[in-house]
Length: 295
Image (cartoon, helix red, strand yellow):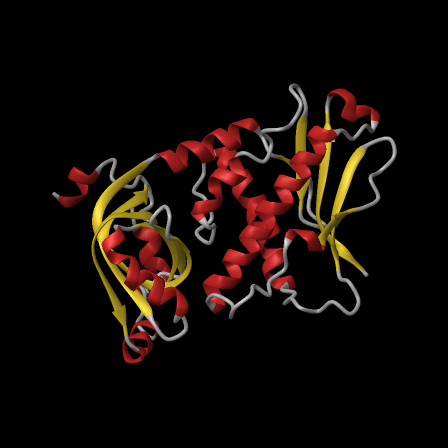
């Protein structure tokens, strides 16, 4: 069964103006589909935590390209549901939101504006490389269903890469569920239950037992890790390295931590409590004239 369109892509320039569809365009479509699925999974995990055991979330094999338009290279990407094969959880909300989020992100990056706060930052490099296989002199536009097509410009992709590369380091700690471990490389990934994001961790072999225990008992054991965090310019934790301490947390600690209000939730709640007229009176030049305001 073919569902409604998930997104629409349009290639233009060169051979694409004649309605041709080559291997380069196919690679772009595949990369786009993979990023879309990864973002939808990240959105799901941020709200519901990691799924039990085998992932039941939609994967890229559930997407298909259909009805490439004659006379133009307009390509709808659609959802495929196979009858009798329901071993996955179809999450239309996250898939639709992921498409809109990509659309808003490319537009913001192209204009040099602030990126959407719900964007999984570890996927920004993948978004920046979506058009890497595009033919020279050609362009790609895309939109969610019903929206106007907008270009994924080279300028937007460069802005995304520059944003990723602007980082700083600071000591920090994180508590979360371990859902992936590479023992050979001494790396793991965990879901931060406080800030609701995935974090890559580089750990020493002396902490291997705690890490693997947290993986095998991830529904009952959280891992608390202290180390040096790598943050992007907006203060989002991208990676944890130089780990100095690792501890397993009990069931009681899990309940306490998961009910704890995160710093972002606190900021959002506090912001809502401030009357609109107060916000309207604040200077709109950030810290440009800071000295004059505090005199």
